[in-house]
Length: 388
Image 1: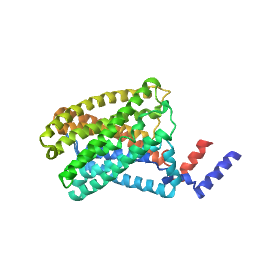
Image 2: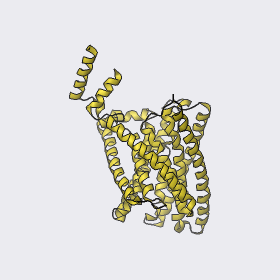
Image 3: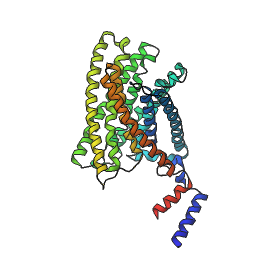
Image 4: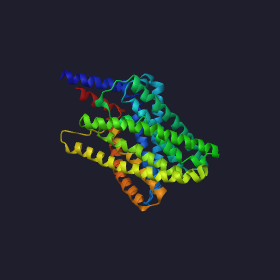
């Protein structure tokens, strides 16, 4: 009875004087931008489905508006965390697992920027939407370059990790430049002069090279870890899907550039076109292989009664990487105009919607019940019960 009375007294104290950890901003990390990435890419894929779907434009616009709201809230909370809880924000840089998600911030920015070009131009004055897309894209490039330099540097000189801790999430901070390149390729025709267009085309190819080189190295480390260190924990199972994200963005780059660089490269563009087809189809094959591997890996955990895949924000790895790969398939269809990739894109999109619906519902439930964010007093009662 004494213990119970103490818990009740403590609960009342916490309600009257909320613990600093109840502050949503203090708890809010950059991993929440994975939600922005997921909703944003589903919005664009819904709107641009190569095979017409009932209500696809209205649904895509609705997702676009929701993503703008989520992004605004997420960005506001993240900035407030830096202002009000600077000590907590700085701790992320000394945590090798938290610092990775600065890549999610960069990619979230670029996904929003691309949605303004793909969807926003049909909801706002086109010139306004394109200007917004350009500004957001440039911001995304800056954050992407910051992330791809700072996070690996800290991993090299500050963080201490073991071989067992090698996982696909290491790709998150190095992928942003290739996402910026894929979204920026669509913007090339909208820069004011051929000089600017050529410069941005070169920047896009350079960012592709930067990420793709790092992608190969990290993938080799991760493959070795899977072979030599045994099955990864269930909580990390969703991260296996991250591997297909850079492949999809690479496909998108090399399928988009030949269609927008004809005025820049002239006769040379025919070779670029052929290279785009060869490279993108090859990457599509690798992506299909990895999807099968990732699916089997998830089934291993689902079928093992002793193994669980507990819900956390890492489940958004089921959404954005598959969305990226589907974007690449759409781009292949756009480049080749063949029904094979249109049908393949539709199949991937349907699978993506299934994952997206599941993860979105679990995220909303997690926010409501306080397992992801403690934002109201009852969550403290639950925390006390768990500690007792």
